[in-house]
Amino acid sequence: MPVDRNAPASERIAPVIEGLEEAYPEASIALRFITPLECVVATVLSAQSTDVKVNEVTETLFVKYRGPEDYLKVPEEELQEDIHATGFFRQKTRALRGLSQKLLDDFDGEVPGTIAELIQLPGVARKTANVVQSNCFPDALTKDPDAGIVVDTHVGRLAVRLGLTDHGPKDAEKVETDLQGLVPKMQWPRISYLLIDHGRTICLAKKPLCADCPIEPLCPSSQEAELPDLYRVAMDRIKSKKKK
Ligand code: SF4
Picture 1 (cartoon, rainbow, N blue to C red):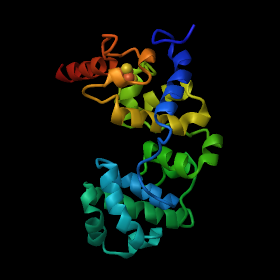
Picture 2: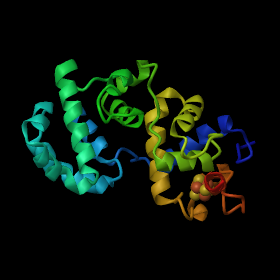
Picture 3: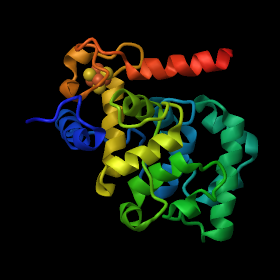
């Protein structure tokens, strides 16, 4: 019998990944970069910004700033100006200069590959570290006991809708742990980008397009099947808790 939406998450995860792979074979990170340093910088700049805006800014930024020393050589105001369009430019400038200094002081100017080392860099939290490791150090990921799954707003929302976590969409670290328990480690980098592409195109936050969804028979939040949207339910619970 084929697995359907009523099966436990542990049985649905493989066909969910398969369905998303078929629908989004090109799924990958939307930020543009070549070196690990560019990946760190682009990911730091992407906070509270869009990938399109960050790519616009980094197109010229990465020509001017090639190594960590370049982010320290210019006056702070000049770097602020260069990244201004991505928003929160003062905070991001502090992070870029802080992480550049740390790379020069402790890592011979090279971006390290383990999560434990990456999160030592100022402005680099677990999500950024996961992005950098999965894109730039895939071999380190397989051996690193701290390796993880990138959980952004789309991944959090879809994990809840698909019943892949018992936690809320904003509990990024708990959602990450639940996904780690379901998804084979080799597929950790893929699952994020598959869910992000699906969240951007079909499983939209306000109104998911369930009639067009390739994994609809596997989804316990399907509007086609007139089921309650588990994401909406979780968000309403968060809102009513805040009111109390
Ligand atoms: S059926 Fe609807 S809610 Fe479920 S994953 Fe597809 S688009 Fe999202």
